[in-house]
Image (cartoon, rainbow, N blue to C red; front, side, top):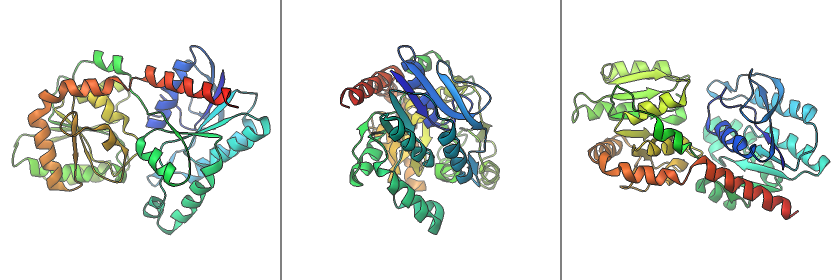
Length: 368
């Protein structure tokens, strides 16, 4: 098969869940197939695939949110620079406008278009953008019929698509299970770990409030926060106000994923307090490292689907006191949960996810 992936951000130059999915599946399929990636020029090429830089690097975010200007620029460049014939196009739903460009090329060249949905926001657009969210809702609504077939990466997204009249095949994200098993824990030990971009949706302030309350139970509690973003300075200031300077370590962005895993392995519990997660790969990575996960019961948090309460972690009510209790319970039982965590994560190995994707593509082509 000649497969064309379309997404603006390119792993490992940008490190997010969507680009990681394209990278991990694409490079595995490239062992048997001809795999292309159309993305922005980040100054390098992803391993194993034929890369097509369609435009200069642009800031993905503006004011902590995805840049509309960048999305429009990428969409226009795709209209102009998408070339050649392919058996199949897999276009990632974000950043939306690129899907319309690929629908044009798909129709023109009669190539099946797969749209891979990582989230479906619906009315959340109004919370995210206020009144301007109506535009986002309209664009999302207009995307319903763009794909010849659709893929959803989580049960949460699959359900939301069904409720909005879109049929899709569920193919989840994955992890590099074998590599994670080989990574040794960091020498510095922690009680709690968090990994993620420091933006409002990640809800790190609630975690800090919980840590401050936990000091009453565990006076020398220690947490590591890995990641960077527009909220970092305000979070560090909040730590000082809460008296957590000696309890919380901000590591910033770590280049190596092995370094991230190493810090998670040195912890007793991984906390993901996000209000919104399209999947939550890092929660699975924590499980693969043998670390139970505490996440929160928000409607748009798909990571909660990965947790079997009491088996590989806990799903907490979204309040400080409930989170404190969940963290305490998990710290007390983290050794008992270790084997369960690893067993749960193993079925999400990227090799298996790539096989599921390959089989899906073959069905799409056979049913044309």
